[in-house]
Image (tube, rainbow, N blue to C red; front, side):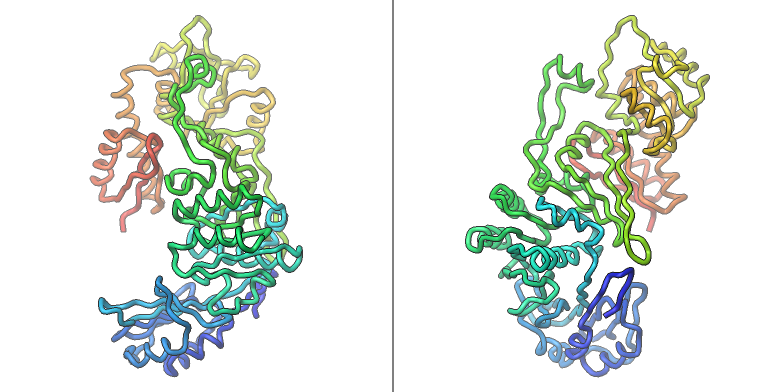
Amino acid sequence: MIIINRVKITDDLADLLKILPDTVRDTVLKHENNDLVEIVMDLGKNPEIRTSEKVINIEGNAVTQPDIDYIVGRVGEFSLDNRAGIERTLHRISAIRNRHGKIIGLTCRVGRAAYGTIDIIRDVIVSGKNILFLGPPGIGKTTKLREAARVLADEFGKRVIVVDTSNEIAGDGDIPHPGIGRSRRMQVGSPDKQHSVMIEAVENHMPEVIIVDEIGTEAEANAARTIAERGVQLIGTAHGNSLENLLQNPTLSDLVGGIQSVILSDEEARRRKTQKAILERKAPPTFDILVEIQQRDSLAVYGDIASAVDKLLRGKTTVPEIRIRKEGGGFEIKQKAPVETAEISMEDAAQFVFEKDNKQTGIFPYAINRTKIERGLRAFEIPAVVVSNLDDADFILTTKSRTRPNSRIIIEAAQRELPVHAIKANTSSQISRFLKYFFKVGNAMEDLEEVALRETEDAIEEVINSKKTVDLGPQTSYIRRLQHQLVQKYKLHSESRGVEPKRGLRVYPSL
């Protein structure tokens, strides 16, 4: 057992080493194994030892068929998804077969049980509410499910059932790994039966809590809703890295309420300052709380999924609670921002409805050049005026860097219930772009193309300089095609992401 930041980790590594051929086992023992991730053995190639930081190639010992058969004979039966394990451990052995079904490659992945990983969200786990974990593969979602099962069963005496599709939560064999404590485990014969086992667990065994990993199909999403409607606490994970990502998934968006298109009356559209056709949440979410695992020791917690989804669909920014584990133990909670702010996008501006009357709109600039705004208002003949007093303002215009949650201007805006719009930088081009789209000035289609391509050029420059991906705002299919063509000229890669009408480009750095 090793301890990192008061998190106890056990790996049962000796059990994994027992199934390896002598040459591979001896090489593994020569290296530090605390960060060992997996051992790869492919027929005719040298074995590889993979750690979290490097790959070690075992020279001069090409894998033979007897080597592979040696391991296969010492593990459990392979399931339909070509996975096997070692009884009462969390190690996973995955097979690669040839077209005749013969195993010619193995990935022996080290399974570790961690104790102390949910201290950062213990209050959330024991709340009795339905909790959904999101995050990239390998970030620790399954580890948190395992410990949640143990804590709820052992410390709170709950009747907990773990629906274990690939034996990742409770390990291989008929006796589950002690990491789930007194929880009961129901194994799933094949991945396509997970939804039926979820329902069977509720109907046959009267659980108070059901824990399920990797909800990924419509049938599983429907089963999850059925469980939640029966009053059983549901804790699970789903495919996706963020709430926005999940909303764009037509198969799984039902987990957070789903999306439907609604036609508003003229009066309601004017009141909301939107187009008549808008997107709204279709139903109550299956899950009450969403936890995004951003890093192993950093979590974003949405305490009210319904509210967060409603804000996103209205184009508002949602700011979750951020929890960070401190080095040496304990954790810090960063509270929500007191007011929601968002950069004005081309889509947002296109949806704004303005009443043409004699009233001039008051713009209060904060960290924005007043003269540049006034020059733009005159150039576009916009019925607006720059004001010096917040009480005379209809909205605040500032830069993104000034919209930190606890900044003075954001607090004052919240007190006065003033909208805050942010532009990328205090430049004439950014100010002009905002004014043209906010006040719907000029030829909309030509302006839209011009600004969209300018935005694409800015993104390309950022990707080249930072070597990181950049997301662009939603656009029509025609403009997205122009953006793709522009990206290709710079030898970069792009792809469209999201669901209409919120579909936009993501620009990737060159390989």
